[in-house]
Image 1: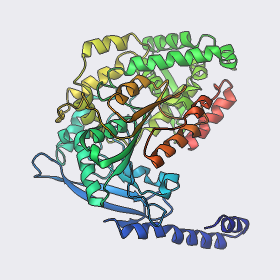
Image 2 (image 1 turned 90 degrees about the vertical axis):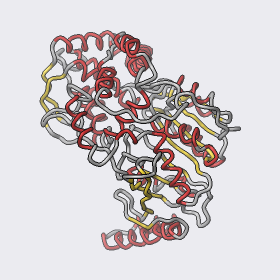
Image 3 (image 1 turned 180 degrees about the vertical axis):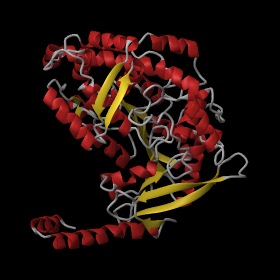
Image 4 (image 1 turned 90 degrees about the horizontal axis):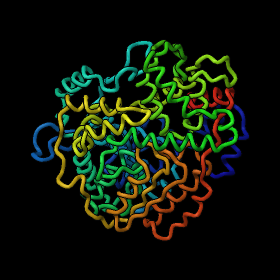
Length: 516
């Protein structure tokens, strides 16, 4: 539909005319799917959240790739077809994080992606996620009327129940990253693509790097953000990494006239708040910002500390953290001096809702197999205890892995070889889970790799002024297939959005996030 036609339709009134216009648009939009179905072994399909037909199919792989025998997994595949009549031969394969996220659920988000103009966008639920025999369990789901993970992240009873339930339909040891990557290489050949481009961030950066290690000849280019280094365990340093980000946030607040003036003791207030909750958990009554349900529970130190760490992932939430801590501490900023736990618990609940859709069984297999065996546990626990976050999260992970089977780990998984594929790595300067030093380690194994460190960014681009600079650099890299010659001067214009220091603005902002 031309711009002129779109403006004409918008100017008309009446539901009948609008319905006819939408039908015409749908018919137009189905052309790429029908055209792509002629060159791919997939069928046009309707995917929830997408207003136009996409392409869907399944590809069967053996669960036990070593023997090739026994149970099989039907991998769910969804393709957002290129708009061009003659698209480029190298599509973009999207991987998602978690671990445990289902890639095909993201396909509708990319219907209007500019990268679709010339290339197919391919989404595959890797083994153990989504509709590829998703290893779903209700771990730490919480009792009625209380948020999930209130007392434990991985309750032993839940972990054991999950393991036993899944054993009827899966050998959970065989849901590792390397096996998933080999599955996806099979799907690439089945779809008929000679070479592909890879995109993935956070845990999916491990998927991207593992693909490069195992099948570099199949990759034209790779883009990875919030990069994890294959040489180390991200689980080991979660608390120390978050402490670095927290310290930077407190320092930025102090240097900001509005934030520092309103909350001059926010660092000390946080320490005092956590100490108080450790002595006496606080009864809290709060409205869930998404469901509207009234929740009553006791807010303890470990729950709050873990959610503070998670809130730091997103700068858009973290810029409200000084005020939320101040209110929970009992600061009198616009109040009566009594602790107000509403904003900080609502921020925690927003994170819980945003973290849904993870296949817990696959997450445990990846963590226990790939992240827990290459560091000294006691040393890591001591370093975590030296932070305000403590060792709760790490102890929970150790506890879970004591009850979860460990899968096969390929030789050299944590000692990657040098790969000669054009690669762009993007790390946030203040990422609390995958800091920039991880990206610096990863790029040393990429002879044609380039690392960009985004100023003040946390785990992604939320909360930044001018994130379009980074988005445009990603697009340009994928179009060109090389990081050489990228003009990255626009990174000088990227910086954090202002801190939220007004209560009305905070409440309004949290309501906006809940509505999204």
